[in-house]
Image 1 (tube, rainbow, N blue to C red):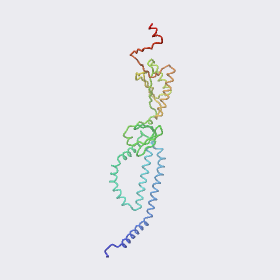
Image 2: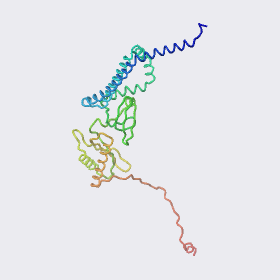
Image 3: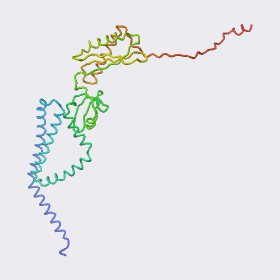
Image 4: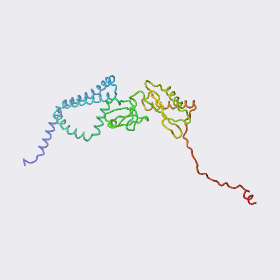
Length: 303
């Protein structure tokens, strides 16, 4: 009977174990509170250090994306250091070593499962240091056009002309070509038009070049280029190209609008016709129509 199960001894053993845990908790409570305080100070320090670093880099780094990604990395490193220091205060060094040893295997499995996410992350780091793409630039990519408002570790965010936001994964931006309107202060604008077949082609060419050169002064080796390119159905078509200070799609529309208004006014003053589409219809079959006889004609014929 003495060798059997004794519930009183079991309960007493449980209470003893709880008592030991409570003693350990009381003894470790100062270290626990200190660890929380240290970790909180590291988080607070990361926040203020990020603000100071932002002010310093604002004058030394022109790219906003590089500044933002650098601040984020510094904050993550400081918080990670605070976490490890807090674990050291809790005497969890051995536990931490075991966790780090197992993290390698777990990290490999997670890396294989999150290939797309990691690809976007590394692509985001590359984009942050890419001088051809900066916050505030107007770009075209993957069928979308807008101003870049954010570059993070997962995606870039652009605001389109209709004020809608588009989120594009970083890997797609890296893998696909993109057009940046803001990297150059001047770009070439093209306008297509057509004139009547009876127009003086040389006079139209000179008039168009002079008209556009007046409202869009060309610089350096720039020039207004005029070329006829097609015999159309109702007109002789041409394209005129000129340089203008455009950095966004809206600037291109404004420049095209001004050019079209100036060209139309000049053509009206010189009697140059921009024809409407014309269609000529020919009827080869001659139809004979029997006209009804007037009253009285049949009687007269009978007499």
